[in-house]
Length: 394
Ligand SMILES: [Ca+2]
Ligand SMILES: [Ca+2]
Ligand SMILES: [Ca+2]
Ligand SMILES: [Ca+2]
Image (cartoon, rainbow, N blue to C red; front, side, top):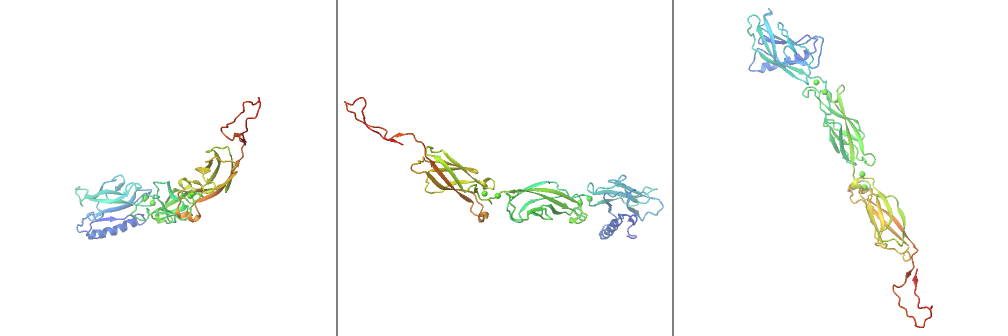
């Protein structure tokens, strides 16, 4: 900086790890200083220390120097402020500043200090005191962390490719403004077959259009976030997302048999149970709701059907008579009342079965053909004489 700048910042030995850093900052400082309309005699305002660096000896950060220093030992350099005397020590004769222990940028990223140069004999200031900053330079010493994981999420089965499921977020404690130490890229470690993740946003999406809940209803996805922009040598963290498929109505109901045969005694009274039939539906809840009906036909209203879940009960609605009709045949239908138009191409969401009911002849007690009879008998009838005949019905 020449004679115009009486105080200099000098870098440590060329083999020192901080040298490059200081040199580049030194150039920036020069530029800044040149542009400043209010130039002061202290020309530095920042030093750098790479975090977490530990050597056998206190590490030299840099050196304060003033042109007023005639190298006669009269100049005394003094450091005050944050960490002065403990974290940072200065050689009061040479102006060399050392850091005494490893620093953690994630704990404290800068220290504000005040430098003073005084005449050792007169104790007068050779330069006005000036504040400067020792900035802690980031290294990539923190892996990405998924604070909210493990996650769980749901997506409807059969959802279109690219359906958004959940957004995962990892954080990285390193410096987001310097280098790539906190630049994260998301990838899938497990579940690539069915899912994709946006490398930048962490949004998990479906990657296939036909995930079927009835085949597999849950997936364990393992996601990774890697810093250094995902490049080799970056640090990584993982999390899991348990993806559960929710049901859609993609399965029609099916009777468990195509035909049932039952029998009923002609003595059975209306309301009597004739038999039970069943149907299945692989879906859940409303999508598996089954409505049963007896289809219109010659049977009329002789029978009733009442469905409860996957089972339906056929009951007698009207008395039957073996002598007038000994068997009945009719069709029953089962259907899903709520259908999803997307799956109608898979066929009608209903099914039919045939029912045959045989009426059993019963040993009926004899009945009088009439409820009341009127007969005449002559007064001269002997102790046993025929009064009349009546017909007993079978
Ligand atoms: Ca990092
Ligand atoms: Ca760091
Ligand atoms: Ca269904
Ligand atoms: Ca389903």
